[in-house]
Image 1 (spheres, rainbow, N blue to C red):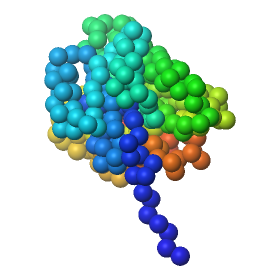
Image 2 (cartoon, one colour):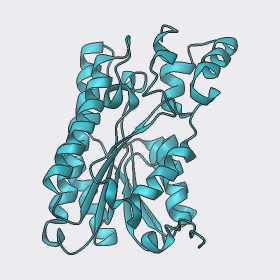
Image 3 (cartoon, rainbow, N blue to C red):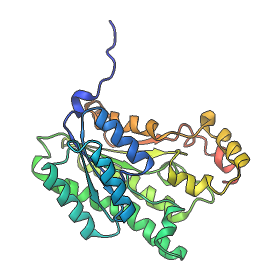
Length: 278
């Protein structure tokens, strides 16, 4: 008997998906993958002029299946307004992909001093993600037992899976909080039709990772660093987007509550980084 190939299109066609942080490397890859499988996608972007222009340009490529919404995860009022806009546009949300975050380098644009940066990191990555989940669940409250839904949170191999010496404390703490939140929500929602997961990527080829790690290296150092990684390469955003597709599909329910190590082996062998002093 031939085993049929996995096909997620039947479970995603016309589903309404909210992707926070849709203009970043992983977020953008998720949007492309979801559109290719028939989903309708609302995505968020940082409330800045250049981001708004990029968001409008993306929506223009597929206006019947895309909508863009400004979001500042430091502000509960902004989170409320964003969720209200998404619900006004699409009437409901089937799948939440909680992807928006800042890293050790990108958080520096929020403040000059490290103490305020740390507060912004925890507020955006942990508290902001919490509030997005809470509002998503509030909107689904009347259909917890009748309509299947998914929450896919983004943590990180640093904080969510492993500890890396030298890793910024607030960064790791915020990602650990997301992993805990995922498992706690999963425990509370076990007897509902809402599945909850977290993905913990490793060294992924995104602007955020380039800013935090690669940009300070010479070309030779970058080559040596990449060669030392599992499989000798960076993870590509599409690698993570494919995991998101599976989790968003009907096939993922047996993995309810899973915090997934998507680091290509770095989570089980962190010494590949720590032995090099990174």
